[in-house]
Image 1 (cartoon, helix red, strand yellow):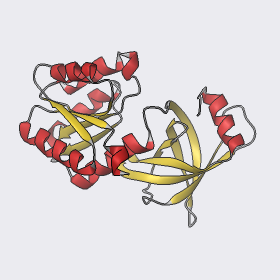
Image 2 (image 1 turned 90 degrees about the vertical axis):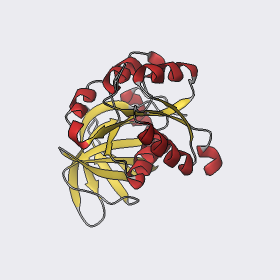
Image 3 (image 1 turned 135 degrees about the vertical axis):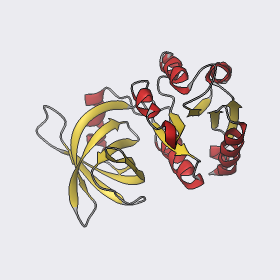
Length: 232
């Protein structure tokens, strides 16, 4: 497992050398290769020279080119359209997160960085939703059955690897849950088993990342056809 992770590269962009050293040290301890830059302009230069980068960990407030500007630059390039971006921000700058929403970040963390949360976010963005997966934004209600209770969530993003869910209550990590939802215009519901990779609180409730573990080929074909996904 470690050997597989060492093939993956994470770009860390932060103007604080203390934060850069902390984050790169943690990521290398998790088994990833890292490259780093002190601002968005240098970060873009490194990214263009290292097309094999699998994830960008990006500070929001920086000189020369800030995080939002770099994020917009990343998303403007077709080759980086699916590159996961994890945004970092200090608690006093949390309002800047909303500025990054339309720019297209995938997740965020509040400084000082908690090693456990960093590991969870990186695992979710790199291991659960690899760049090879084409992710599609959607807005579908889903019944979430955890065995002891059932409640309604909303699918915000789907790929052949799994889904992102928005929920009103938390679900435990590493649980296997049953997801049941309808595709618009189709009478028969889909039922898919999924493993909860992460679940954390947001301002609007909870966001969870789940990877598919129990799914019939016919069901996968229906999902692929509907969203125009091409599965291996």
